[in-house]
Length: 231
Image 1: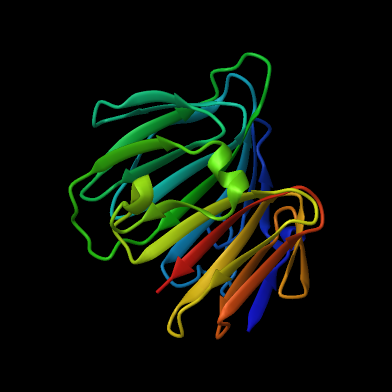
Image 2: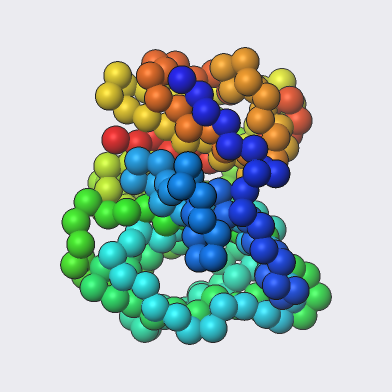
């Protein structure tokens, strides 16, 4: 079964400095039909204006992945980490017992476009942690593993039974993904347009997948996608 979450049906707020779309219930946006999917709790698509950002705030008991689509984002946290992440970077932060951080667009001219992803951890009370890795042209070769519970294939490590893949597909390119009988998947279209098992998905669309053994993804336009293989 494939359940499509259309981009236009997401929660949307424009605060001037921040234009944000919420795939699942988040903050002031509440939709009881979309509280998350399996351990996947948040997919926010954010555009942050030049010179603006999120002031210092705190999280706990969540695995947070930041995936940059365009521009740059400056990160600082209470663990002493500080960096500027750009397209190709994948940042993972384990909030655990509690962490504070800020995120800002360091550009004076251009917006930063990103996906903010939250995954519920297997257990609470973990030690806070931080990891950042770069995935460049590998995503154009097929489904590149970018996050996993054991850090395999040089992916970032998340404390949950989830594998996250990214791919950049040229028009007409097809990729396949096999799902084990007890596994589920979520696909998020970051850019472009695809066909998923005969269903059309456009930029910003997502799809919840259960009871499917094989996923066939074709690019209708040059596309960038994320695939979450979930328990």
